[in-house]
Length: 253
Image 1 (cartoon, rainbow, N blue to C red):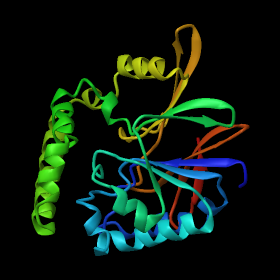
Image 2 (image 1 turned 135 degrees about the vertical axis):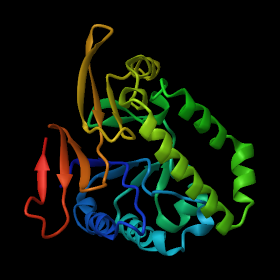
Image 3 (image 1 turned 135 degrees about the horizontal axis):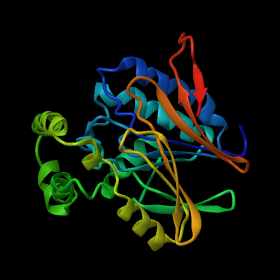
Image 4 (image 1 turned 90 degrees about the horizontal axis):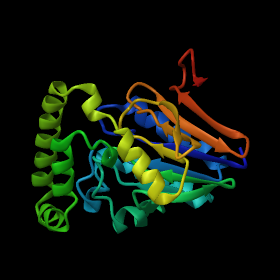
């Protein structure tokens, strides 16, 4: 509806989950077209091995859907996640989306808010933070993108297997954000509202920040159903989106 901004993250779209991909395409062709803007806060794709892979089967339909949405007049802002940090100018060109920094401070109907993917807040997971620093370095990315598509696919496949194995060994609290990091970044940017994804733990956290009420809204993943945050001048609402034919197509929390 007019006067509404939509936020999603952690879709992890890939060819192995066609039902979720179709749910996203239906969302782009439907409700997203009536929004003031759509923000995708990271991990749109399960992996993105470079802009030259945009024509591959796993990506083609999503790229076309995003392009149709931006051509219809809805601005779409996309943030890098920990799976698709190699999206670049080529992605912007074929989709019409605009890549945004992580973090970025925006105005939401008169209220400042900070947007993040969220992985940089998981400071207790020192192993992941070291890996993140490596793959975000310009030298690593230059060397990786110089490899063939087949080599890049194989490397990302091995990274995913390693990630699955190490995740099973880690305590859940290690992989969540740390409150100290949350408060520090909010102070740095002068906000009392933070929206992020990454942890796959949707919900709202209210706490005191320097004597004022602060809110951290966590977006959900799209593994079993969709998750969307609706923001307008009246407030915020976290909703679930379900595939067509599901007996419970939409719920709110």
